[in-house]
Length: 309
Ligand SMILES: *[C@@H]1O[C@H](CO)[C@@H](O)[C@H](O)[C@H]1NC(C)=O
Ligand SMILES: *[C@@H]1O[C@H](CO)[C@@H](O)[C@H](O)[C@H]1NC(C)=O
Ligand SMILES: *[C@@H]1O[C@H](CO)[C@@H](O)[C@H](O)[C@H]1NC(C)=O
Ligand SMILES: [Zn+2]
Image 1: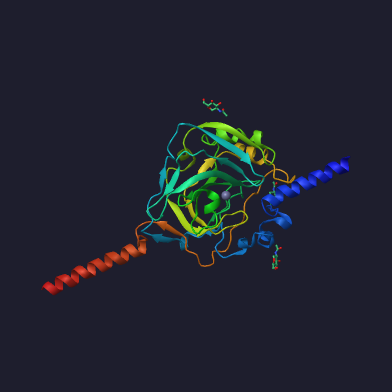
Image 2: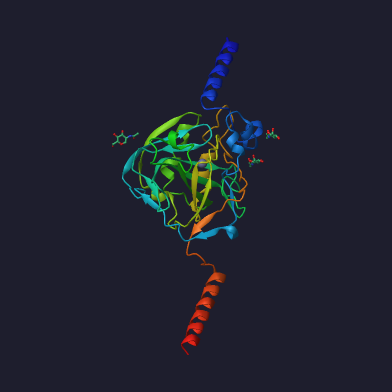
């Protein structure tokens, strides 16, 4: 009888795994280093993968990058959202609240589908992107898809089909009040595959830092099948979260397949392979270039004056 039961369980987990593609995880022989070798995930071994380490000294200033346009992110009315444990992360699916990420650089606005988190078992690790090698305890991703497509499934494999907005967290003594109503519900989604519908009163803007300066680069999903369809926008300024809130994440959701508490669900940085990371600003706004253009201006004026004489 027990044997039969185990057989059924094995069969069920097999078919669940098959529906989503090969089993993958964050450690061991199905961990990040092996993803590219697992059936269906060869794109994880391609050349424009995410996350990456951002070397701030190498970031290019791009005067054509404009301020982020975040439509309805400031809507603070009550909305009904679904918190779930998908076996790899904790995510919140949003209803169609008209949330859009846009820019003059985009041919179409991007529509928010969900947001989720990646974190560590300790606060010295957890983020996917790193900045000058610094790892953060938590990284939050807002996943948008291009309104050129009807559904996220249609956009996921298309060039620039998705736009992800990333936010880093640093530890502070007080709780993050915007996340509190969500993280307090984590005991309701301990098992992989569980979900919990809730009403949230507040705005998406309350999850973001007030300074929206960002880094931009072209990359991929950070989970299999690692499609290289993502326009990445990473906010430069982190927001705060308490150790107590981090511990709610570390001691409630469980990984799929009895994988233990969900921790260290982050992919390490991937090679840039010549990609550019840019940020908005005035071209040549670095100190050296300002001095250079002032010198050029003085030279021109002197030359003009001499010509008139
Ligand atoms: C993935 O496959 C490549 C090529 O077959 C092999 O060299 C590499 O060791 C494999 N990596 C892992 C982590 O399995
Ligand atoms: C945290 O995770 C790392 C990597 O898996 C592991 O080496 C380390 O022992 C863990 N630390 C604690 C305190 O659990
Ligand atoms: C959300 O609020 C609506 C309107 O007040 C209510 O009918 C509904 O039951 C609430 N849903 C949950 C999950 O609390
Ligand atoms: Zn993510």
